[in-house]
Length: 457
Ligand code: UD1
Ligand code: CA
Image (cartoon, rainbow, N blue to C red; front, side, top):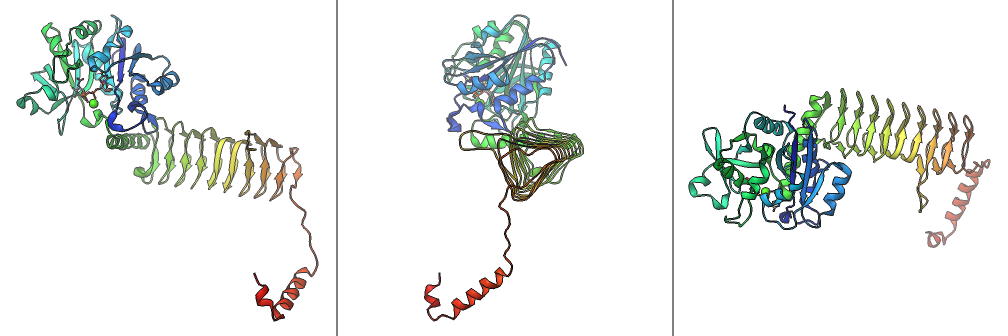
C-alpha cells in the first residue's frame, strides 16, 4: 500500500466502432454499471490522495452526464482527434501536477482490480520511474509485446511494428502504465508518430525513458483481469467474468446460493451474512439484502433494500425505491415500486404496491392494488401500522388507511379510513330466498320449447 498522491487518467475517447452502437463504448454496462464505472470504482478504493481525469471524444455527452453524477470530482478532458494513446493522455495535461504519480488506464477494461493498481503504485514507490502492466497472453495477436532484459522492460512493440521474432513474444502490454511524479509531460512531448499506424503511442514512453536513464519495470497480472472489450461478444465475456467474481464475493461474505451460476448481481449489490438466495434471481443496480434475509427463486430486484430477516419471492419484483423492512414478507407475484413495506408487514400474494407506505405489521390481502396513477400523475397510498387490507381491494390514491384499520375484502377505497375503523367499499350483497330454484325452472321451460335450439347463443 502506498500513500503517494496519484493522478489516474482514464482513456475513453475510442469510438468503439465494433460495438455497432449509438452509445459510447465505455457506457455499455457490465453487472449493471457502465464499464467506465467499474474503472472508477476500482480507482475509488485506492489509498492516498488521488485525482481522476477522464479523456473523452467529441459528442460523448452520455459520458459527461454519467461522470457528473457518479464521479463529480473527476475532471473531463476532450481529445478532439483520435491520434493515439499518447495524444489522448496529453489531452489531460492540465490535470498533471509535479507532485503526483500518474497511472493511465483504459475505460474499456473493466476487470482490472484495485490490488493490481496498488502493486503498480508500489513499484513506483520502490524506485521504478515507468511501470507497465504485463500478462502472458494465450494468443498475443494484436497486443503490444513487452521486450525485456532481465527484470527491466526495454521497449513495447506494437503488433504492426513488430518483427517476426518479436511477434513470437507472449508477454504483452495490458494497457495500464504508471509514471513517477513529474516525468510524464516531458516523455509525452518526446513521443512521435513514426510507426505503422502513424499514431502517437503511449507505449513509446518506455524506450524514451530508458534512453534518459530512467528505470522501467513490469508488474504482471492474470490475463482474465485485463480482458478488454471491443465487441459485444467480449462484453458478454467480461460480464461472465465479473458475475463469477461477484458471486464468489457474496459467498465469501456469508451468503448461501443454491445455484450461484443462475444468480445475477450488480457491482454494487450488497449482501449480508446468512442470506439465502435461491436459483434464478436477478439483482439490478443499487440493491441490498440484510442479514438473514431470504430471496426466493425467480425474483427480480432493482434499486431496492431488503431488511434483515425479510423474505422476498418466489416470483417477486422489487422496483427502484422499494424498502422492505426487517422480517417483512413480500410473496409470489407481488410488485413493489417506490414503496416502503415496514418491519413485519406482509404482502404475500398477487399485489401491486406502488408509491406507498405499508406500516409495520400490516397485512395486505391477496390481489390488493394501490391505484397510484390516474393517467396524469402518481399519487401516494399510506397504510398505517397493523392495518388489515382484505383481499382484492383497490386503494385509489391519494388515500390514507389509519393504524389498525380494517378494510373489507373486495373494497374500492376512495376516501381515507380512520385509525381502527372498519371500512366497506363494495356493493351490498342482496339475497333472494328461493331465487336459484326459479332460475332453474325458467331454464327447464325454455329447453322444452321446440324452437329453443334456434334461439340459443
Ligand atoms: C493498446 C496498447 C497495446 C496494448 C493494448 C492492450 C498502445 C499504443 N497500444 O493497443 O500495447 O497491448 O492496448 O489492450 O497504447 N484511445 C483514446 N484516444 C486515442 C486512441 C486510443 O482515448 O486516440 C483509448 C481507447 O478508447 C482505448 C485505449 O485508448 O480505451 C486503447 O486504445 P486502442 O486503440 O484500443 O489500443 P490497442 O490497439 O488495443
Ligand atoms: Ca484495445
